[in-house]
Length: 315
Length: 316
Image (cartoon, rainbow over the protein chains, first blue to last red):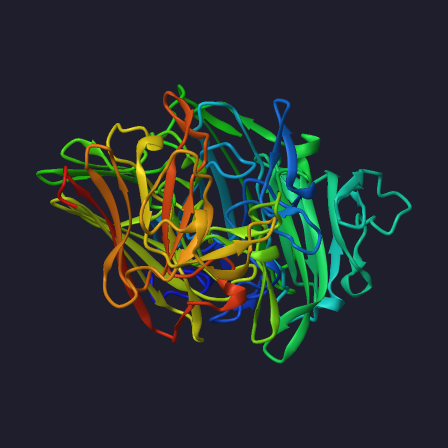
């Protein structure tokens, strides 16, 4: 149950059949995930706020809105500028919101947060995130309901940094079955969506993470092992064959990959790799790409998840 | 996938609604920014009313925490390190009115005549502190007491300031016909981006201590050196020609008032002149000047009150 208040809010532990997740109510953050003792995500340091957006929910848009500006029915909208270095509006409106706990069992929790009309965002949305343990990982279901009297745009994403047990990040191999990527300008706003063929952004065959330097969105996903409307969109494989897999339901058409060498660790900066499921690409409020439009009263939900398999478990 | 398409059910844009009442007074509060939407005594309206389905126009009734007014360039320094806040006033490049203006407060306690709402401030861009905050609205026979409280849940000292943004009135008397009295003996000089550059003794048109007609005032001015320096006291009031008045009182912790008189406050019958008298514990840009910031040790708490009182004819 909830204990002391941390920078990540109230803590929630899900624990069933040797799969364990820790959540926090601020940004509905995923603080850690382990499967049979193996780290599946980079855990958030106890007592610290999420570093580099680790584990936070991105809503009602993931990634950037160029200069925080977009246009709604011909009217200019100016969002708060939340990324001082690049002058954009980054990662939605709930990154520091303390969600309510709507449901909590040993194996699942639902967190809810209301998005109120504010600068550049004239909509009232009720949003939710449900984390549910599975035998080999976690299912995360994002929901939104439009409580406004006008139709509202919506997009969402999440920002997990992945681990494959104790394997060194640089030695992992990343595969992303994406046929296109989003080229960006110096402020990381997208300027085109070229094919990955013949570019350094072709991750359709495994690439060693230590050789990658990415802060890149990918599109035209061709998920593997599609079943029940969901498929695998990224996976990291360790030298011993163990694997962490990201799956998405089909309306999640995009994934952002971010590699860094400066994730704060216990003994100084460490390597980390984020694989961010997204329903829309960067700057979608301007491009319209991947944007959901919710009529008054309408709801939406969609899922992504993580799966872990040890080296001796095959996959 | 879209899983449901029910008929439109617009919810109140000002959040969950609370109404408190006693024999004489009535207040309406919304959870968004813990907004004071309406206050009346004996049916006399003491604040500009805001509808449930409106986001506080011109900040009307909002709670401003953990700082009121502006932080210049949305940047301040802590232990020599620059702290970059979100820019919430892009036109002027500042961080305005704290971190809770878009937050739906939680209900903590409620009685027929009082309601207490709480909100967590998590560490975030330019703000490395974890604060548990609350605001309590408690009706009195002649008005309202508003108590702000905070506990520092960080493992380090935290900074704190708070304010509120009521627009006052005296019933249906047009605001232009009121007399404004403000006890501040000093006032802030502002630059073109509304950040303070100097403190001056009040003089001329800035001196509101003896009461001035509201008509023609164009205030957007921070006042200090109020009448409540030693003890809780009346710090400003609006008086009607018939002698009725609405008074703002405050604990000594609230050492500043921002006076703001827009000509175009949006009312139901169209835009008009209105008068905000905003009690504040610190002046604009206090995160940079350090003036009157509260420092809370780990686990430390603070609370202080201000309020609004109605006086019938001749009783002030």
